[in-house]
Amino acid sequence: MTAPTLRNGEQKVFFQAGGQWCYLWTPPTFKTTRPISLAIHHHGARGFVKEGAADWLEEKSKLSYLKGVMDGAQCAIAGSHACGDHWGNKEAVAANAALLRTLNSFVTIDRDRVGLMGGGLGGALVWNSVLGPMAGLVKVVVVMQAVASLESVIREHKFKAPLLTAYGLPQDTSDDAAIDSIAQHDPLRRLRGLRFGTPLPRTVIYHGAKDENIPPNSHAIPLAEALRRAGADVTLELFPEVGHAVYAMGEEIERHLEAFFSSCL
Image: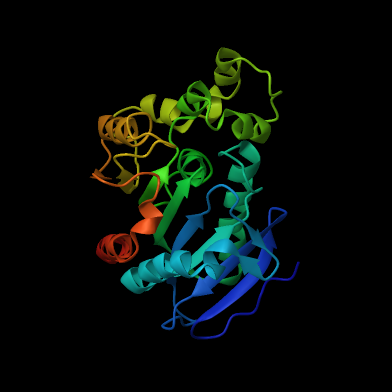
């Protein structure tokens, strides 16, 4: 597919990379002759990017969060369909890497100002990208109500079935066999194995303290601990009365996103 032609100013363009539909949304301040900072967003379950559309560009509440990031950092926003409900599998990681490569072919990205953000199962793709083909390329990460431990997802059974589907495993696979099979793709296990001082992006974790879908004790808290043990700059914010609905916090989470990206991207 031919790369899109960009003009100065705000625009949304759709293109393909790694066999997946992707988008780029540029801010009003965008100039084709100047490098631009970039935030790559990773959708959650049932999220999508297809020709001419993406759930995060269509739903008003989701769009407002991306706009807050854009306004805070004066950055462009991009995203890939990344194989849909991927749970951070290798195909999604490859698609995410292809997105960044393809963007570099038609827009000048400030390589010192690249950030990743995502929630739900998108959190697994964020970390598997940071620990894989995007190692050393990402300055900041934001994860919200996000998956960090595939082992916990399997043992808690609530989302075991779609996770097994994403990794091509039979639905009757036992917990232990499934955990062993996907161990190399489990972000928390991989992060726990890092040596202190491994270069990692500055990270903020937004999570509901009452999240029953992705419990903080299984995901957000051990994620923060693993990052700190590796020497990363990490902030964990647990919202006391919030469940699996960080996105539903509206203006409050929008202000958090805008402030964080403004300060570090």
